[in-house]
Image (cartoon, rainbow, N blue to C red; front, top):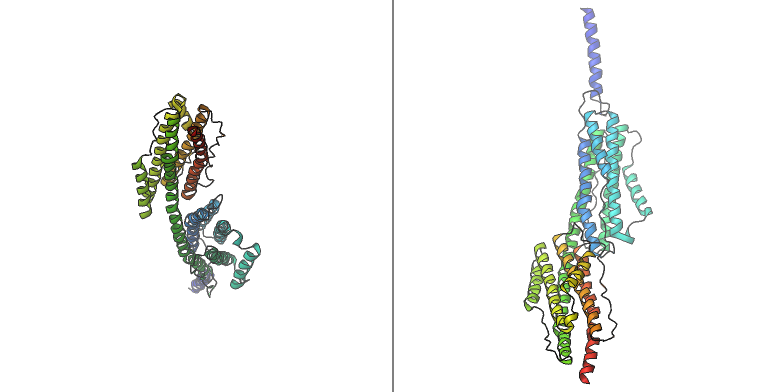
Length: 452
């Protein structure tokens, strides 16, 4: 009985030691069967959500600002390193399968690496957006140092505590950087926004791993509270500006094409009639289809009243129809004055094919971008045809004029609605630069002949 009591006391002492070990304040000396801390997955998921936001809304904003500022090659969205995202997921999964200190350290390191990958993507986005206003390396170094000094990492942290602390530090550097970059963008683009401060949470009173992970998660949440409403507000301003420019872009394009119709109805029509008089032929000026002109105007007005994608596509299609109506009138005019020298259907088809072959349509165009692209092709077919017809007339009537080439603009490097609308209007302007002086020169010769 005495032996039994001694043995019982010994067992109780061993049990007490085990219980004390399992309940120690720093919860990182795991034993077999201990449950993993949920904070690693929660923090990873939050940081990965930031990566989604960078790849999505921030990327959209970057591209749209490139469009709005008419950057030569546009701005390109920067996506977060996919491998860093996968590595963080795998490291946390490995920790949850086997929650040892070593795996906890690996999980924290991988999450920190993903935080840094987020920072790299954000910096590369804002380097495009801010241009010369982007902070210098010295400024960024000072920003990082200010966060490090504020947090003042203790020297006596254990492995898992130390790595969790480093995650907090990395996240709060990101938050502070995002606040600074948003404020610079606010000033650069005169946005007039009230950019909120990064409300970084303080360090916990007890620096154990669980508390530190909670602070890391709260630090990520604070980044979202700063970035999401700010980016959404900037995007709303950019969208409004782009819509306003697009409204003007469709109308500018329509007005240019309608101006060509005026030129066909007027100076070209008069030239046709005078050539008929000069050659004793009954040539009649051909008028551009009035209904098509009215339809183009109505479609653009409908788009301006309701700038939806559907109305944008309709506007572009109706302008293209007007371009084709111009072509029909020009062809009917020149069929009269060129007679047998007018190109055959096969020659016209070959001319159209040569222009179409010179365009490589991207596969990822939006509906309105695709419709504008078609209109550009139609305009440049017209320009190429006018050049050819004027050269034939020059030869037929022995005018000895130096007919200029149709200087069709190239497609923009960045395919977006505004850039394509600009190219469309420039394509129309190039037709005018070819046709107006040539028709005026021919008219002067005809007038001189008629005067004699």
